[in-house]
Image (cartoon, rainbow, N blue to C red; front, top):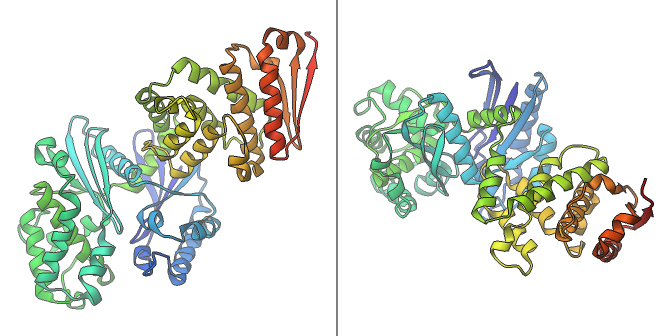
Length: 487
C-alpha cells in the first residue's frame, strides 16, 4: 500500500492506494483547499498565516497516514514551493508536521508524473495524446504515445496568478477576461508548434481545475455541454454577465472555488487557442496517481531513475565499463563501512555511473562539470534533492574536501564520499582488483588496511593514498593507513 501527497498551489491532496495485481485502487483520499499560491507576499515569501495553515493541514494528513500500514510514502511539492523565497525555512517545519521528506519537484518531473497517471488510467498503448494540466502556479503540457512521453514542458502560469492579477476582488469584465486570455497565450506561443493537433489524436485535461470547468459546463448545459472551445467561450460569456464571483449561480462547483476556476478558465481558453485544441476530455487522473504508480514501479524494480541515468551516460558518452567499475567498487567499499541506513546506496551507485559525464565538457575540472550537469539536468524520476546529493558526491570524487565540508557531518554521507573517492582512485590507477583485498573502517577516523604485496604491484597507489590522507586531514578527519602480509 502506498501514499501520494501533492502539495499544490491551490490545494494539498492525498491518495492512499493499494495495488490489486493489475490496478491501483484508491482506499482513502483527502483534500484541503489552502491556496498556498495566494499566500505569497509582494516579496515572494510565504506569509506566516499561509505557513501555519499549511502546517495544520500536514499534521492532519499525518494522522490519516498513521492509520494505514504503508509500504512507501512520497510527498511532492510543486510550483509555489519551487518559487517561494523562504521555502528553505518552511520545508523543515513541513517535514516535521507530516513526518516524511518533502520533494520539491521540477515542472518537467511534475509533467512526467501527471502523464504517468493519465496513461495508466487510459490503458491505450497506441494512442497519441496531449495532456494539459492547469495548476495553481504552473501549467504542464505533455505529448506522448501510450506510456511513452515524447515531449514535456512546464509554464509558469496558473490559476492563482491569473485570478489575482486580472480579477482583483472577484470582479469580472470582458476587458479583464480578454487581457487574462492574451496573457496566457503569450506564455505558450513560442512553445506551441510541437503540441499542434497534427501531433496527437486525443487531448485530455487532468487537473482539478479543468475537471471543475467540465462539470460546470456539463451540469448547466453551457455551450454544447462538452469541454469544447465553443463551450469554454460560452462559459466565459456567462462569467462576464455575472460581473462578480459572488453572483455566480451555476451548479457543479463550490463557491470558494469559483475564483480559482475563473483564473483557470482564462488559462484554458488561452492554451486551447494557442495550440489549436477544439475539444478536451477531462480525466480523473494526474499527479497523485502518477506518484502512486511510480512508487509501485520502484517496488517492482522498474525504477525510471535507472533508465534516466543510462540515457544520461549515453548522451554524454560516458565509458560504460569505467563507470560500472567505479559504481560496483564504490558500493562494495561502502558496505564495508557499515552505514546506519541504506539512504545513500542508490545515489552512490548512480553517482559512480555518472562520475565522468563532465569529460564531455572538458578534461580539466571534469568532476566540477559533471557535478553541475548531474545537479541541474532534467533527469526524469529524480527529485531536486536527490540530484543535489548526487551532485555533491560527484563533486567530491577527487581533490580537496573543503568544498563539501559541512555535508560531511552526516557520517553515512561521509562514508559514501570515501567509498567513491577510493573507487575512482583505483580505476584511474588502472587497478582492476577485488576491493575485498582492502580493509576499510570509518567512525571517529578512517582506517585503511592494504596488503604489502598489492602495494608493491601498484606503486602509484601509495602516492594517491598519501594525498588522500592530507585531504581528509584538512577537514579534521584522520586517515590511518596500515599494511599487512598476504594470507
